[in-house]
Length: 334
Image (cartoon, rainbow, N blue to C red):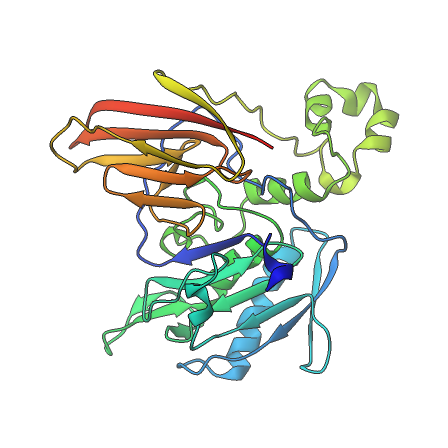
């Protein structure tokens, strides 16, 4: 579908495991490079219902609770509409999701466990749940039927964050972390609130936090009032000081044209392929994303675009000992 070729998508997996590369940064939320967002705060959603385990009443209740978690910490309000009405956000449970084979916009659902759900950034506003999963209200657990029962509210809250414009957080306990189903986190963190404030406030130059740290909340109140909306609470909860992320040593710099494919190889001379871990800007890379990033053994292939700009680091480990590392800094010429 031609109209959807610029849509970005983020999914959530059940069995993902992660160890965050420790870098000197306090801001853990991430926004899309284009800062995709809604142009309004009152959003509607249209709901369809799964066929496995959970009934329509509990589905409606669970989804409403997930939306309420975001409306409680943001200016957004959400209202369910009927099938004959237009909706900003469409939520459904595709059984046969075969269009993902032809489109890089979708991760294919893969049966029970694995890919649980995925969502589209604004303004597309879609959330897809895998209908092969067994959805419940309550803590995720393994049942006597030998299948995982997955908490609908937890996963829906994570996906709604993507629909509002947030990417994955680097904070291990954040509900927007890549491994959200394993964090056990039931509440939206302050870091995620800051992410929404950064994305939707009038502070487009990201200067209000710096002014707040300089004491302008007291010394230049009129300036803060004019340029920094009170809804962001800059004077009450200023953004933490963000230390610059250091460029790893032995970094090679690449300036390439948009659309070019790049392949980086890690530890080619090292016989063992075990213990090689890839990071992008300090965040663990575990999965390939069609037409964006491809991970294969000791190499990574990326397509040069705005999403993929950044620093890629491969660390070669033997148990807990780091043997060596390689880094590449990618910038795109548009």
